[in-house]
Amino acid sequence: MDFELKGKTAFVTGGSRGIGRAIALTLAKQGANIALCGRTMESLEATAADIRKLGVEAWPFQADVSKLEDVEKFADQALAAAGGIDILVNNAVTSTAAPFDEQTDELFRYHIDVKLMAYIRLARILLPRMEAKGWGRIVNIGGMTARIVAPLRVTNGVVNAGVANFTKQLATRAAKGGVTINCVHPGFTATERVMQIFQREANDAGISLKDAMAKREQEIPMGRLVAPEDMANAVLFFCSPMAGMVTGQCIAVDGGSGESVNY
Image (cartoon, rainbow, N blue to C red; front, side, top):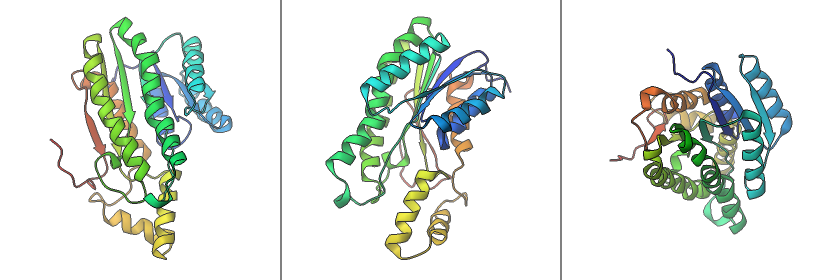
């Protein structure tokens, strides 16, 4: 199937590992050139090398998106290298697996800066570029804690709820400019960060990591953790012509584990 992304340029934050890496590679397989940022240059270079093997361009940039100056620098450098932008995937994330009593002001502020504020700042910088040519896609990655209570992910819930609301607000603003803006909520996904959550759950329950993972998998109707590629395919849909009239939406990729009803 032709997703009509050949020759387009996508910026992916947190693009060197986990969900971000899978998104970058999936878009690249459809012919998109990729600018990606993250905190570790070694993993960025490795992902960029894998992207280039697919016959497209890749530009890795080291950035701490909790800092405004790094966000601005990434946007400027990526625009200079790529010559423009068509797709922005806001994926950068951080979190500390701990209950409310252990979550300090600093942890809340850092999570807000890494995720919500970085998403807002990049959209502010890059959306006008898309509107100027009458086409663009922004996809925000915001976890399932936007919809559920998760005792070890309190900061996630606050931040992801903000991401969902921001997505809807900005989609209304951007629609007349030919830009769609949507959000994907990942359920428990097989990434390093989720393994940290499982490890904390195992420690608190006095069980093994393997048993903690098995318990979570049993709670997922589809019977397995979400793969990063599952997330990437949802992002690909939002970037494709099939989603040309879909904007301001939040879709969960969680194997059916979310029990809330959303209208």
